[in-house]
Image (cartoon, rainbow, N blue to C red; front, top):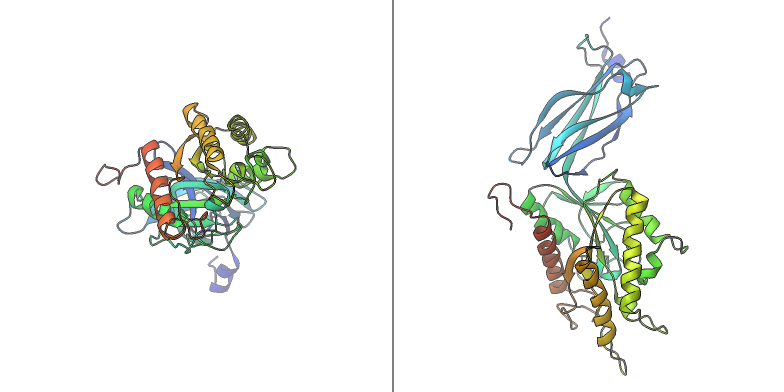
Length: 358
């Protein structure tokens, strides 16, 4: 029986995953399985997908491939995966048929942009989130933010987080994507002005649990690393003594180890050298700044976390710090540059065309 145009329109494929501009974390082989899920008519036997690559982009297109057979389709719900190489945005097309023998396509759906690249969780205090000035915006098409519901071009303020100002992350995303020629995604998990011990599990705050939940959304080993920028509250919390170096090191180690245990896999953590507090009348923070930086350095030296950028030298109101503590225009740029240097050095990121890092 031939389908009339109206009948064809009534036979639908609803695609729930992936989302537009979703980024899947690449593995050591520069590949990722793009997860697909959705709804088809209950008598569907085959769901196929195809990935088309933007012109001039790094990556490899994939022709029609079966992503779900009868075993992966139950009560009209299907799930499957399509293996893609690292590169630019892919246009993903999905279609279904009622029989493996019958080539008649009964319906389809598409996602305009899906990518295989790097995903980062940003966490810590105000200099990891929207308290810089001015707001930053990605100039590349491959850098995105995720707010828990949708992926959008990286443009401050980073969503689902505190503050309404600027961050270093759009700048870092552009630096990374220009080198790797692959998408970069940032997901915020920052809660402002808390000491490191308030990120320990079971203290009632739910901070590390929130970070783990946001990491889990991307799936097992679906995030490259946590980028941790925190320490000011431990160097100076009004009315309380500063955190000792030993206590900071102990609590940060416990936080990192707890996150990995809760996730069930060894998530990379990069800890920034970040503890600067501007001087106040009658208060000298040089010792407490040095204590927290010493603890952060110990985490690097003992292999608990990888070395992030040290930004304690970026001081003074104006270009580096717009209000003496939060980064201004020059501070945001240098902060991003130092994150880029730390990540590109550790992961040995290279331009896939030249074979050299930026």
